[in-house]
Length: 254
Ligand SMILES: Nc1ncnc2c1ncn2[C@@H]1O[C@H](COP(=O)(O)OP(=O)(O)OP(=O)(O)O)[C@@H](O)[C@H]1O
Image (cartoon, rainbow, N blue to C red; front, side):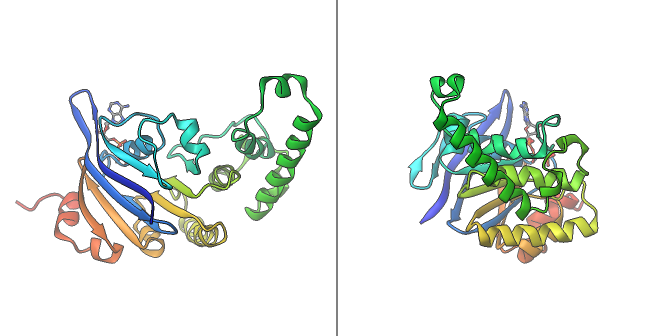
């Protein structure tokens, strides 16, 4: 059974067809790359999956339910986690608070529990701190727990974003260019980390990435987009030599 099934999804920004008839079938436990030249529509697809925009047409099913048109918070609560192309952290909050908030954002406190700081609220919040610290340890970030997020080196900020996305134990993790801005050594470490997280958390991963080393070393399948159209789906090694993919990246030979 697929965890994520998208059927003929399209999205227009005014006169621009950003995504056209996009379909995707992602098995539970799969690890797929979404690649394509700049402006191909990759981030728009992530935004459609996570409810940032409603699709112009098409259907999205996740974990056996149709989620088309659902608001983002409801989709995330159904079991998705996401990181962004431009890191989005609460930069002035501590590393611990960034992860803790990722956990409590999923928890349906009542208004009275929140303003009254009831014993149940305090107990739950303590539990979130324990979970957040465990997550920071897994990511090698525990020593930074009280440090404001903005003081972390860039690679660590990326890891923190992942820790925050995983604290709610999502089934599907969407990663938008996780290797962006990383040097060679950081990229190699990232590939290892993602492989480990994928196994330990029994995740299904869909990732956007320009770094072909990451795609080739990590992804079982790759889907290549060009101007909103899907031009290839298959093993990444085959994508490298596929004429349409070469044409999209290198331009048509005259
Ligand atoms: N909010 C928006 N309003 C109008 N046009 C948009 C908007 N977001 C994206 N676009 C346009 O939609 C197309 C697809 O953009 P998108 O960001 O999805 O591409 P991408 O494949 O993620 O690119 P990159 O690799 O550069 O991040 C582009 O032509 C872009 O300019």
